[in-house]
Image (tube, rainbow, N blue to C red; front, top):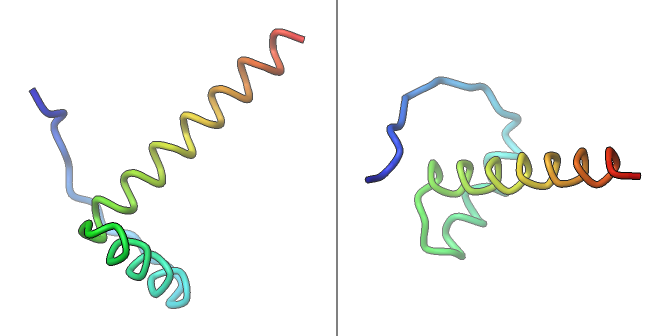
Length: 56
């Protein structure tokens, strides 16, 4: 079962929107899917870094 999704409203810099739209188009994804994937990967990386640093 797919995770539930919620709608939010955010304000982004125009240049960031242009970059995100380009990335989404290149990957044949919606802007929303692209942003969600980028955030997921970033949070996963932060968690990995936190766990790696904690193990030192």
